[in-house]
Length: 222
Image 1 (cartoon, rainbow, N blue to C red):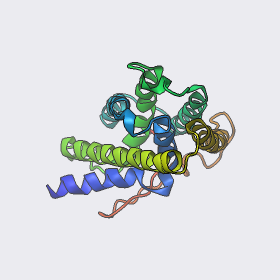
Image 2 (cartoon, rainbow, N blue to C red; image 1 turned 180 degrees about the horizontal axis):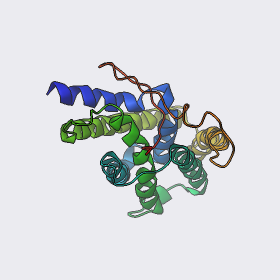
Image 3 (cartoon, helix red, strand yellow; image 1 turned 60 degrees about the horizontal axis):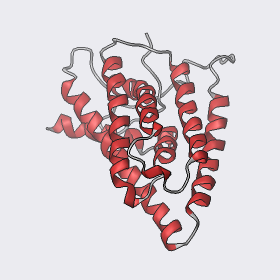
């Protein structure tokens, strides 16, 4: 149980750190089009994203798939960029449709983010350690953090839209525009086709001291 709690905490910290800004931006952009009355759609959305990143998290942790870190970082930045752009096309009421392409997008983009999660977990595991409990606990920590983050997004949106009387579409476009700008700069900085002498050394720093670790989403390196 102590191990479960330890890796659960690592999962939480994997999201709620400055180094995880890209994941925070993605979840924010993903949930921004919804309000409290759309809670069913949000649950489906989070489930789709969970299935996606759990799949590649498991496959990467077991070394079944492997992607270079610079490619993973670049594609994670692109997922944020595309999600922010997709918010431009959201119309009032359209977000409550029973099915939307956003769910497919969450599933596919979740698979990309799962590659980043895998490196953080594997860097903490010993070679001979049974990884089932750490994998489960780490993933539970991530999911809890994502739900809390989605709740924060909904609360902030409620304050501005319902209480502050800011038109929903204005709010959606304003925040999406900020996220677009940040993710565009991220994509440029992470361009895998430009020369970067420090590519491998700067791909991520992890501190496994039993308390915390810093994070940048990267994939497993062979």
